[in-house]
Image (tube, one colour):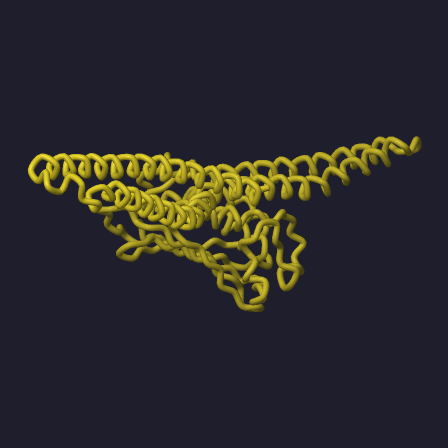
Amino acid sequence: MFRSATFKLTMWYLAIVMAISIIFSFALYNVTTGELNRGLNRETQRIDTQFPVFQNDPNIRYMSTYASQDASRIMLRLISLNLFVLVGAGFASYFLARRTLEPIEAAHEQQKRFTSDVSHELRTPLTALRMESEVALLNSKTSSAELRKTIKSNLEEVTKLDLLINNLLRLTQLEADELQQHFQRISSRDVVEAAIERVSKLAEARKITIKQTVKDAAVLGDQESLVQIIVILLDNAIKYSPEGKTVTLDASATGKEVIWRISDEGNGIEQAALEHVFDRFYRSDSSRAKSTTEGYGLGLSIAKMIADVHEGNITVKSRVGHGTTAIVLIPKAANTEAETVAT
């Protein structure tokens, strides 16, 4: 589709350029030959007036022929110039057409990918909902206890679907760069405290201790999004850590950046899987697959996009059997000073 659009747009650009070039050449030809003929007529009249002896000179008679030859040469040069413009404008038009259509093509591919992601990820839970409901309805001997179990299972699937849809909508918002319109000065300590509060119940349920060390600094960004990126990383660290272990959250600052480090004592991730952890819907099938943790593989994709929108960076380092560390770097806000260390 975009190849055809590129060709059509190139032709339109080329047609516009050539129309301007031909009109300009036509005007230039008329002006040049007009001035040439007027100059020739004035010179002929001057010679006839001042030098009557040359009135019958054949060279004077053939001056109009010379003028016609000059006009022909001008025409040939203008044609050559237009051919050169045609070639150059063709390449330039194609380049401009590609540059014009690139963001449209990217948006189209983004929409296709989003639609594909949604259809792919919604199919599984919807199929499960349908099958469980149909089995329960078709079996006339289904007890009330079994029906309650089916309804409870269906509600769990609905909760997962709700989470998936919210995450997908969050991705579309991040891709539209809407967050940058709401950036403000934020304390890194406030981000850490809000994130820990949100995951505290999960940590308690899994008997995970969260150890924090915070050196406060200010960043320019969207507070809800920055809290979310830390929540995503803490949530992963807690879920993939054995019960009774410790998750460490360290917040520090350099001259230009605020740094959050979240480390766990889990099984770690193999090097081959690390290359794909930020891919949408990717979940490692190696060491972390030993966990029964459920998810859609969108968390780190969202975290990466939040970091990108804030002109920051996020990396994940891991060794199998030695845990995983996620590092988030976000530029500091101007004119901020680090405060005291709290443990």
